Image (cartoon, rainbow, N blue to C red; front, side):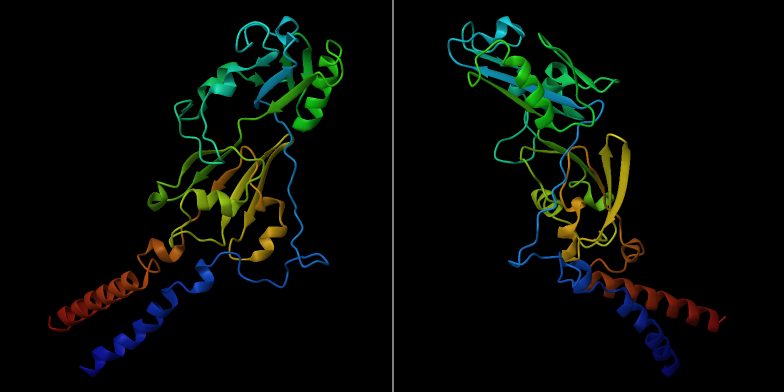
Length: 294
């Protein structure tokens, strides 16, 4: 009997090391590497999104009530009838949710916003957008504000300065989450209508991460005009807030890795770890006794 207890003590360290600690699950834990300014604040490190090929943009030209922007640009895109003074892409009316939520309404389908796709301004293989009444405008590698200013200058040629306004946007921030089998509800395409979005906000909107996900091994693929940049972030360290990858950009792909401990049945929660450990010990002892009595 004492020999059997000896095997229990051999298995016990395995059970202890298989358990998940609080350091594995807590978000943004204190780190000496965190950079703060003289006022004790964490400086913003928000990267500016630059347009890439195959992006789709929404253009909205607003004029005074007496102005008729449609006569210069596109009567097809004119909203509200003649003389409204506004040229609005129908993409404005499609999909997404208000208040910064996840876009899951009727305008959204699997794999993007259908209305936005058919009626938005597409960045072609040359990196240009074709604005009706203006012509081709270089978009790739530029910010939305740079492109907006150029279009505004063209629009001012037909209207008095201050009597028109160009509004140029993407369809919010679209990002993608891919996890394991136990995070199927979290995985998928997400759309948030906000100017900025942090990785913690993105995960909170979707219910957060469970214990099977390794928060120290989050991989992000970021689409840039020059190509795709791959970065690995650690959600357990607060110095993540100094990283440009703390902020989600349009087109980001977020990959969630499963803990090695969770793959073999250990580490999901204390009860399951104990249950798995007892099962392993019981099976081992049964095999041992069976072989001994042969």
